[in-house]
Structure formats: C-alpha cells, structure tokens
Length: 143
Length: 380
Image (cartoon, rainbow over all chains, first blue to last red; front, side, top):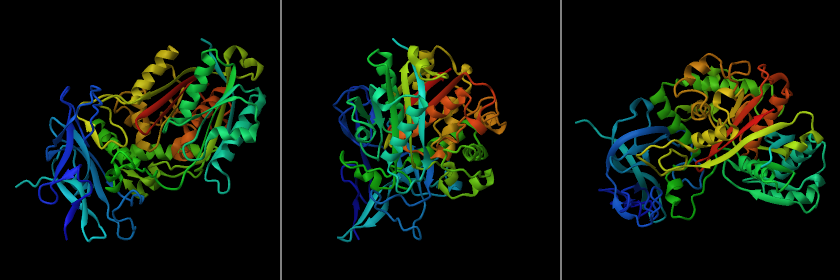
C-alpha cells in the first residue's frame, strides 16, 4: 500500500524522507509554517520556500483524548476504536515551533525539552487504496 | 468626549433551550434590558449586535420595531460581545448618539467548536486532527504549569468554585456543584484538562443599554460607568489558538495589551479592582488570565486559589456568576454576560452571590480565537 502526503506542498518526501515546507523571509530572517508569502514579523511579502529542520525539542504538548469532529478530521472517529494521540509544539532551532501530532500519547513519557524528530503517521486509506499520512514528531531514541 | 453609563441590563438564561432560537433569546434580553432602563425600543438611536451562529442580529428589528435606528452587526470571534460593546461605547463617547444598545446572543451545536479550515489550502490542518481549541488550551496550561508550578488540584479548585457559584446563579446553565474529586475523575479530554475543567459552547443572550453619562439619572438611580473598553488583536510572537506554527521569539498576548490599555484609559491599576470576571474557557485559562491581567505575579495563583482568595467571599472574587464554566459560551453573548454580572454586583443586586466587599470597581476580560482579547472596567 502506497503512502501519500496529506498535502504535497506542506509535507514532502513521504514515506522515507519526510520534510516540512516552510518559508524564510529574506528581509528579516523570520520563518513561517506553512509557506506564505507575507511576513507577519516585518510586513514584507517576499518570503521564500525552505525545508524546515527535521529535529527539535518539545516545547509543550497535550493528548487528544476524544475523537475530533468529522469533518474536518479524516482519521478514526468511532469512539470504540479511536485511540488518543499526542499533539505538541516542537521548537526547531533558529526556525519556528511547529504544531504537530506526536507518536507518543502517554503523559508519563512526554516531557518539555525532550528531543524529537520528524516522521509520518497514517490517517486513513483513500478510495485508490493509498494510505494518507500526515506529519508527526517522535521522541529521539537514546542509543 | 462624553462619559458613558450603563442604565439597563437584560439577559436570557444561558444553557440549552430546545425550540427557542438564538434570535428569540436575543430579543428577550433586549426587552429585559429596556425594562430595566425604563425605556422603549423606539427611544434607542442605535444598536450593535453580535452573533456567530444564530443569524444576523439586525433582523431583530422586525420583532422589536421598525424604527429606522442604526443597527450594525458585529462579528469578531470570541470578542464579538465585547466588540459590540466597544462600538456602542465609542458611538456615545464621540457625541454621535445619546442612547443605544449592545446585544449579543448565540446558539451553537453541541460539543467542541468545529473549525473548518476551508480555503487558504489549510484543509490538512483540521484533517490531521489539529485545529481544536481544546488542544490549544491543554498545551498552553501544560507549559504554564511546567514554568510556574501550578498544580492540577488548583485547576480542579477553579472548576469546583465555578460550579458552586453557578449553583446560586438562576441564569446559569450548570447549577449542580461538583467536588474537586469529581472534576479530576471526569474524562481526560486534553491533558492536563478533564471534561469538567472545560466550558461548553452553549446558548443565551445579553443586552446592555448605554447612555451619555450626564443623562443617566433619567433612566436609573444606580448608573454604572464604563471607564474603559478595549479590544486588542495579537502581536508577533504571542501564543495563540489555531497556530500551525509559533515564532521562537516570545511576545505577551493580546490579554496583556488589552489590560494595560484599559487600566491606562481608566487611570487606575489592578490593585483598585474589587471584582473580576475573567475568561475561563477552561480552568487553566482563569489561572493564567489572573496574571496576564495584572492581578498577581505568574505562579502566585497557586497559593491564592488554594487559600480561597478568588471565592465570592475572598479577597479578590473572580467569576462570581460561575464564569464560562458554569454558563457555557454562546460566543455573541459571553463577553456581555460578564458585564451584566459586574453591573449586578456594583448595584448590590447579585442576591445570594453578592460579594461582601461593597465593590466600587469591576473588571471583565474575554479571550479567544484567533488571538483577540477584550477588557472593560466599570465603576459606580
């Protein structure tokens, strides 16, 4: 089963080398995610696309404990099979804090400041049999 | 510039009202406010009306009277009610009009607000299971607890206070007291926040009649004066709801900016406020907003709440009507509910939940999507 990105111009490199597409303002150096031309910091409008870092630290987090409404959510919403998932902001050094799903959902194993790296998680299978994935961060294993 | 007085307040009970439209509730609130101000709809020169999900407020003229008054609809996220009020305030302050009304009402579907990220190619945000207000509140208080040592028990105490106050408020939705244990043991919706730490979208309506201050005595023996009324949007670097990214740089949020501006406008400081209604979308929000509005240092809330200082009979009563937690949040009406409660308290008409400190100044604060805050300061 092929994996496909939920949005090609936000998440590329699925499945093996996921990357998030953000932007960097040539005038003030500010980063944005997702890409937009307008800079909320310096009011310029020439932001250029960049690939964001794939590693950072967990800045804050929560655990989504109930099924989100569908639409807009396309993942599992049946309360009997829904599984809680983590959501957090991961601070990418020198860039931005990205809001993302987390592969970890146990509060005992989530901690502000922990090292995280980019991956993908499946949301649903479409009519063509492709698995639609979105981006997520997972704790970096200490080897 | 003219001073502005509130001479009439009206409210339709908050809660769930099957078979009663949001507009019906707005009309009831207007009629009650007019009766309170001892005036008629035809006396009003203008109206500002706010509703997110319950129709265009200006169409209520076909129910209240086609008098030709200026009626402007206001739609400004969670500050919709506050924005209707600031519009009315400025209309009188500028000298354009002498008397008018701010009205807000709403009726939302059950459950957490559904956010449709259509257009702007942002569908993926909601489709991925983000774009929930509940997640933002969980993440903001989680970081705050980490930084400033707030305990989960303090969050439960805030909820227990809200439901205790709601139980003695005949206009409140949730009128059953809940213990801290019941709050902590309810379903974990968005860690560290449980079900009873969150308010719910709901229904209700509130209307406020405002006049030029020098005419107030024609309408009431107990005028309350609007000393300041401010709405602020966010600045670069603040931490707001519905943000796919945050800047690494930090800036204070719109609450801090609105609070500072409101105190400057009123010429007083936080130490002069006797009672406050602060946005409590969830119990952590009340905690954080105490500091963001200048009423304590970050982290000081832990001991203040544990010591009961924010109870009705405490040193600094907060959310005396049960707040959003006990009243629910009909967006168009929510900010005006806070003003309604403060007017009752300043008049000494709050009944069983009247604060005993003979309040002279009162403060309201709303916060919400997409990073907006409204503050008022009232005095008698």
